[in-house]
Length: 137
Image 1 (cartoon, rainbow, N blue to C red):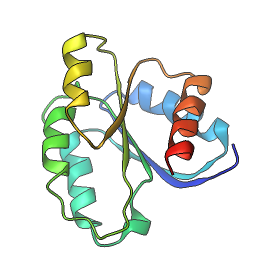
Image 2: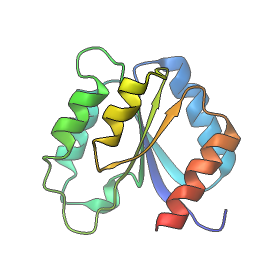
Image 3: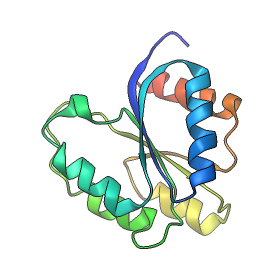
Image 4: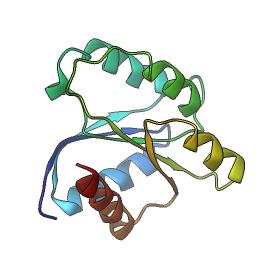
């Protein structure tokens, strides 16, 4: 990888997945820090709090859609309403255990969603996500 991202954010209620994904991200060595959120509302509150400071926001967001309380769809519906300071380039990739065409097609309806991936995410798959971000930058 010829580029680095300053920060990634994982939004997923599964603690085991969070641990595995964190290790996968760390193995690539291209992301400075990792934010972890265990539900959509926790993440949404963070983004609202930091909306005026893009340097405090992740370059890449890995979002689960199946979470209790506030799921990924509800998060996306609220996230698009946040008036981020100009210059914040958000890349959201849905990482889900759901492989239904209904969920995949629904994700395509969100212009801020850059990709939809079915768990588990291997190091190779994660590097593929990073390459897609690098080529879009």
